[in-house]
Length: 342
Image (cartoon, rainbow, N blue to C red; front, side, top):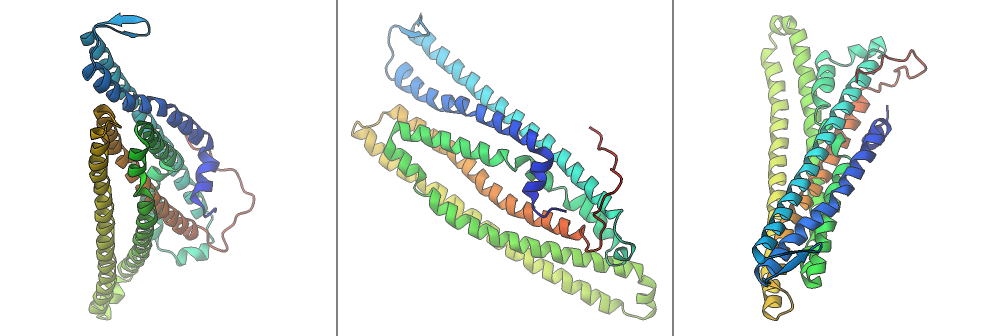
């Protein structure tokens, strides 16, 4: 069984991932137009009203011109929302289909385990892996290729808009992104390694609970209940301290990321305001830049979350693949399993 989750995803859903990528790219022009239109409304329809303006050769008064621009903006917002809804729905369908396939593959491999291997693994551990541990992979499988493309493309579209408004504003907007890109993933990696250790401890606890239930008669007859409880207490304590460390590190990362995100608006207000006072930038461009930067933080946060989810999914998938790949498991030619229902 392959240990790389991306190879599994591409092998079984490559065509769907390409369709997702094309749909994602098609949404970027609509996004850019929705960023540009507020600036036109402020600078032309409100700050510089004319008795008559033309749109595609059609003359209209100032009120009509304003209403046309506003309804166009509303249509762009609806179109952008429709793209997001369609992309997210498609990602969900792809993710659920591939998790269904993964569970089918795991069950197929489980039925081919050598008989002695069943004495080394607990029934509860196999059930938990197939039913529960594969569930979080559905979201990542749908996001695996489309999410970085969509969020990265959204960021580039917004940054292109900011640089077109004023190169200085664009530089201010991206100044702290390299700092976040270097620091945040390193801190997140430690959180994920702690998460891997937590999963390992929980599995050990589940296995020990299964053994205790299976041998409950011997435990009571020999009077070892207190020893078993002491062992459970040790497992629970280890899990508690690991989770506590995860909480501390996770919320420190969130605090640091939010703090860095709030520094940039300070520079935008101060530097952008200075450029407006010097006549090097219009108020409409500054307002549009501030609105665009507000939209910039969301895809950047999604990219950081994607990196964190990628590490988590890869660790989970490796653990699952390792668990369902015993050394003596048959991998030779066999009868083709029945196809999955569509």
